[in-house]
Every structure is written in C-alpha cells, then in structure tokens.
Image (tube, rainbow, N blue to C red; front, side, top):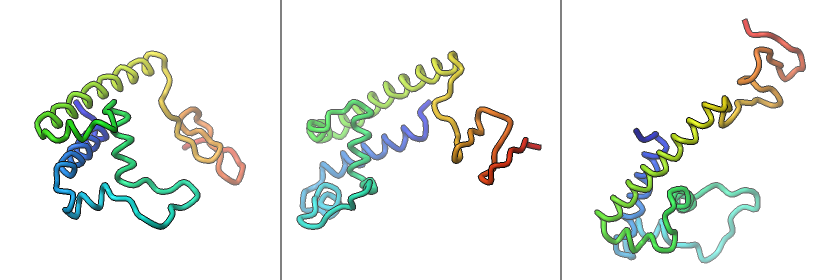
Length: 134
C-alpha cells in the first residue's frame, strides 16, 4: 500500500512527463521549464519551486535527472517506470520502518522549543515551570 506522500510524488512525476511531452510553445511547458532572464532569488533559503520538488522526487526515486525526458517521451513506459521506482522506494521505506520498530527508535521526535513531548511525561512550559499532564 502506497503512502499519501508517495502518491503525491507519482502524480507530480506523471504531470512532469505530461508537460515534457507538450509542445515547447505551450504555456504550461514554458512556465515549468523556463528560467528568468533577470532577477534574483532571495539570499536566505528560498522557497522551493515546483521544479525543485520535481528534482528532489527524481533523486529520491533514483530517476536520472538528465535522461528522464527520453523515458517520459513514451507515456506508457514513463508510467511503468514511475510505478516501479515508487514501489521500490515504498518497500525500502517499509523495511526501514520495520527496523526502527525492532530497535525501538523513532524517526523523529516531536519537540517544541527545548521540550520533548514524545519522550517524557513531564512537560515544561516556555515560562520555565515544570508540570505533569493531567
């Protein structure tokens, strides 16, 4: 069973294949694959663009970022390729989760400030006093 996260990635990759097969003069193709001639992105960590997320999805699915358009040119092959890579990734995630369960560790701990709610019954509020949940 695929996670919602992986379903979103499948849809994003399929949409990218759809757009890559479009004529380069079509507006969606120009919007997604064009670069600005002038202007700068902010110096701090810029917000991720759709294309940035697409590249991240490709890296996570082990899809070659330079060769993907050749595969995407054939719709059925692209769909099969994405499905295969996603199933492989999901199986890997399931194995990693099972290993974490056996070890008794969690992937992430929920923290607010310097307080870990996942680990202890005692909680600190930002004012510094300690309280126990009721």
